[in-house]
Length: 234
Image 1 (cartoon, rainbow, N blue to C red):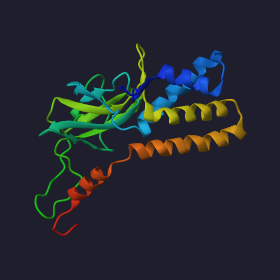
Image 2 (cartoon, helix red, strand yellow):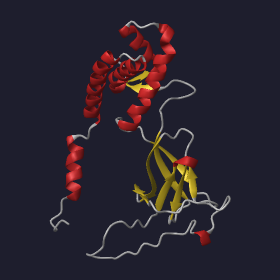
Image 3 (cartoon, rainbow, N blue to C red):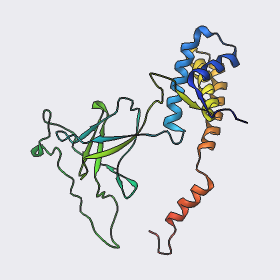
């Protein structure tokens, strides 16, 4: 016998919220907006497996990649090596100016970082042979430096809300979304007595979701095994 789906449309979540709370459908669009905000927060902070990726070509003129239109928050920039992602390292002091529409090396623009490396026991970290990046949020782009590849993979979070067609919500996140709607509605209604109650209810729902999304015993075991070695640790 078929069981209920593990997904619900965002519209159905709002409809069920109105049914459960007995609230007027006249305010449907307000609660739908709260649900959209909640979905964005769930994806950025708590849900696993929702990270999006985009293969992007590095601009030959500016050594940058542009944010996708649905970009909300950053996860990482990487290149594929031997079946795994190798993450580039953020370089805080990287020059992110451009001279006109291009880079001027005499101004330090686009010049590869030449960090020295030592091979063997005294080797230290902090040097990434695959490259570096620096985010320029103001212009919605990321500077890439010292990367031999013409393309990189950007991992990022989106709102998860489709502008055309249905938006699907994991059932495990519905309680947290409903609690978020109640909490934000009380805040915007200036009902501070209820807001304190709904805030506790929201964080209880988030704690439950975080527990569901937490690493399994086997994942924790494997992570431990990865760092176990008979050699001296440093």
